[in-house]
Length: 443
Image 1 (tube, rainbow, N blue to C red):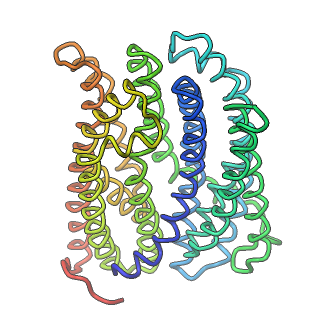
Image 2: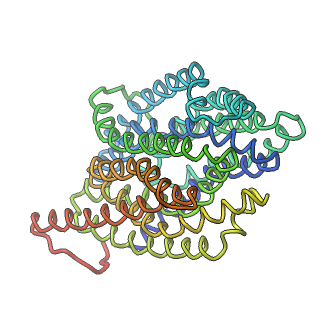
Image 3: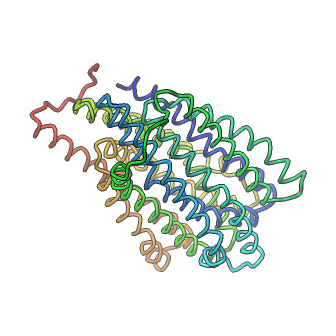
């Protein structure tokens, strides 16, 4: 089971890292422009990430329903989910893009950066970058489609090409053309548009997935939306909480905002790795559920938890032992570096728990119970804001207490969600009169 999960997960992980690399590449180049430039992009990125969260209303459900259909050996049903989801995804993307363009001033002003120059740059960057949203939404949808079919290699190959285009264009547009952070936005738009074109080409020529002569079905769209609502709420709440936290952090100036943005990018090293395994687990578990191989679902969860422990412990060690070396890759001025080291050390204590939370979420998704992770995650993520206010009034250094509010909530989510899955799924197996296995067996 470990081999099957890893085989499916590795291309997914590579794809996620490539997608993350878009942000890494932009951050590395923009970091050379100073912490103000990083703060501007970091502020605008909250609302771009909100778009990623909103896209989940279709993309998550599409991946799950396609996996279930393939587990039932019904490719025609899977194609119908592809057709119905693609149309809805594009419409949602266009609506959100128009909202961003019309209300960008309000969104950026809400965070209260208290620096008109940075706010102005963030507003302009957000307006330009929002043009990439239709492509980003479609790319996320197509990636979930291919993975739902069990093909995780195609998204990796396409994402690699997109990254190479982005890496090539970034220095040209940022420095040679002299467009600064706006050059980074334009580079991302071009790269994402090419990725969309490549996905459409592969979709057309990949006979298992092609939707020629397949009609749009409202009932199938409804099924995907029902599954996607809870993950969407979870991710939207997470983004809004991040915005609220940024407003708190802005009390320590633009440097603190930049530090948080860079810290999140570094933390994504473990997040993306485990998220790849979580996505693979969702697909394998979903196909097993469709085929009524319930013990296989359980065993793939156990395999995933083992992997999460390994990744979590490695990341924790890196954050605690080498925080300065990691953070200085992006920002190395004295003030930023000191804040960044504290951030990584404090968040290092929660890495293991974040990893097991993600794997447990993937297990719940494969089971079709997307609402349970959302309930746990939304409740505890929302606690970060009042906890941050409480800790900043009674503890010091005050900025570090904000980082602790994030770390504490992550620890709680990991413990509760993993325990909940073990309790509920073992109970489900017993109800099905199936022996609960604790060792890997071949299927």
